Amino acid sequence: MNKTLNHILQTLFFCIVAAAIPFLLILNARQAEKYRDLKNEIISLEKKQEDLINENKKLISDISVLSSADRIEKIAEEDLGMKKADSEDIIRLEVNK
Image (cartoon, rainbow, N blue to C red; front, side, top):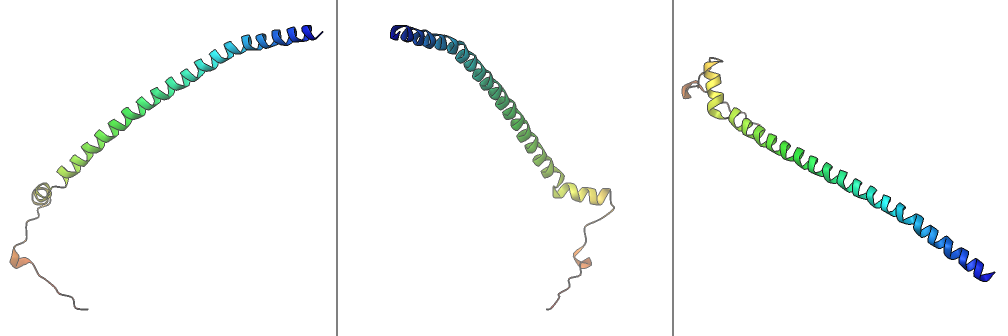
């Protein structure tokens, strides 16, 4: 009886191991798929980050061009009919506390 029980336990152990091997292979494949998906997401996010950095650089450059003193002066003179004030036209006020 002891030999029979021992044989049954041994057979059961081998059946469990045999059943576990496909399960572990499937688990490994699932982990590889998750890794691949995360890697693709990282690549996509890095590309998006690079695009945003380049767009930000372009916008900063545009701000520099649009806010230049020469451009503002030209718009003020040509479009708005303004002119630079002569020094005798400037009135300075002092406010005492």
